[in-house]
Every structure is written in C-alpha cells, then in structure tokens.
Image (cartoon, rainbow, N blue to C red):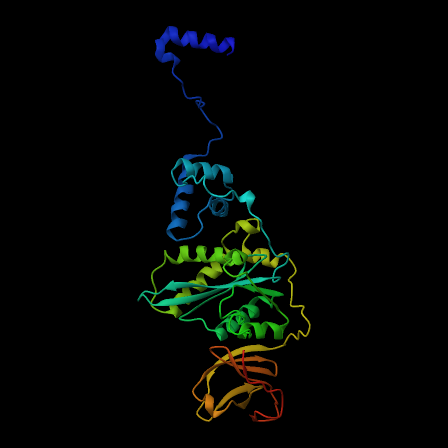
Length: 367
C-alpha cells in the first residue's frame, strides 16, 4: 500500500484506536449532479402508476413519460439504479442474456404480419378468444378482435378489416391452428389460405410445437394480458372488444417500443415505404367490404350494388345458415362461419337474381 495511506491509518489509530482501522464509506460529502429527491419520487410514482394499470413500467418507458412531462429526464441507467435502490427491480442472473438471442425482423412495414389466437376469461367465467395480428417490422398492432369463439371465416373478416386500415401485407405468418391452415385436416386449405392466395399474399406457417417462430405476437399476448389483468372483468365479448380497442390505440400511438428504437409502433410503421402483395395473379380491388347475413327460407341472400338490390341464390339446403359475404368490386365469395365456401361468383349488375348457373364463375366446395 502507498505511504500516504499508511500515514492516514496511523493517524486514525492514534486518534481512535482499533475503531479507526474499520472500513469507512467512500461516498463524497456532497454530490452536485445527484438526481434531486423530487425527481426520484416522480420516477417511483410513475413506476407504481404504470404497474397498477398493467402497462409497461421499465426504465425506458418511465424516461419517455418524464421527458413528455418536463422536457427532460435522467438517463435510462440512472432511472434503473434508482428503481433498484428503491427495491423495484429483482435481480435475475439466471436469465439468458439478450446478446445470445438470434433475431429476425422484416425490413419493411407490411412485409410480414404475424397472427395468433390467445384466450381470456369473462366475468361470468366463460371463455373468449382474442385474435391478434401484428406487423413484424414496426410491431404495429393492426388487429385485435374478441369473439366467444373464433371460426375460420372470422379470421378472414379480421384480416380484411386490418388491411382496410393499413393496407394488404406481402405475407402472413401463423401457427398451425385449424383456423389458419387445413394441411392437418386431410391436406385441404382453410378459408384464410384461400383468401390470401386470391390476393397474392404469401402464407407461411411455423414449425409444429415451435411458438418461437411467431415470437413477436406470442410476446405481445403477454403484454396485453398483463394489462387486461388490471382492468375490471367484463361480462361479454363486446365489452372486451371495447377494452382491446383502447389498448390498441395506446400501444400503437403512445407506448414507446424497445424493439423499434423506443419510438411508437405507428411512428415506425409510417417511417418507411410499405411492402405489398407480389405473388402472381394479384388483382387489388378498388372496393372491398364484408357483410354478415343469414340465408332466407328460399335459399337466397341479398346484396346491394350501386344502390340496386341483387338476390344471390345459394340453395334451399342452406336455409337459415349464417354466412360471411366478401365483396371485392364485382367478385363475391359467400362462406359459412366455419369456412365452407358456398358460392363464388362475379356479379352481373344487369340481373336482379344471380342464378347458380351462368352469368359468372360459380364454385361450391369445402376449403
């Protein structure tokens, strides 16, 4: 040890005896750049408030909200140290380091969407499905829809509603659930696969029992459920949808996202040119809409085009069946809620009644 330190120890021993040799704090008597106590209290208050709402309450998010309030905020490392000192951070040395992760991300918005279904319990104990659709590049939540049960035709409806807001994607990635693929049901195709083919959108599926392939939407399920757990339990899927709509807006436009440089998903989505479907045979319709109806006792449904009502025959055998009608300009597809394609035709605007034979392409098969 150095001579000055030996002299310091001798001086302490002469003055205090053996007690003078005990280790002492090296903390300086004053710290001019120390974070003010009121700022620390505000950090703690934000941590508690965000956590109580079930929202992300990490150091980056707290710094974002502090900067929004006051125009400036301590560094993320400083916020992290304050939270650790106040007991809000539990060390987890057993966790795998982030540097070991192998990441993949689409280069453009709408280059790839990830879709998956998770489950939630309503106030009366009945189950509900939540279909989430996430943009791979920007993490934009393009769709989040609650239903008592999600059927094959419902996936098509949610896809078109999301595309109506943000444009059609170049590809779509899902797991191997029955509403996403028919390959494990006799080698056929399900409704969403047929629809994606018709639009020129590439359809991709994860390896069986490997949810990491759809890791972005799987991880989003956790974020959503953590928030839902802090909300009042609701009795119906319609009420749950109202909660999902609020969270989708907050997640897309307010909450900073670590994976996109701490900007919001909407800002990341708007920052770059969008990808679009590019597979052969793509015809982008000028006008798209979706309708739900029930086939009447005579086996007919009605559809209005250019203010004129048209009748579409489907057969008396299907009377009373609930259907989803997909309209793209004059191209029409009629599906049952379970995904069975009852009829595909090109509407003849000059005819009131669209017969099953003649006047366009008719198809009736299970997809």
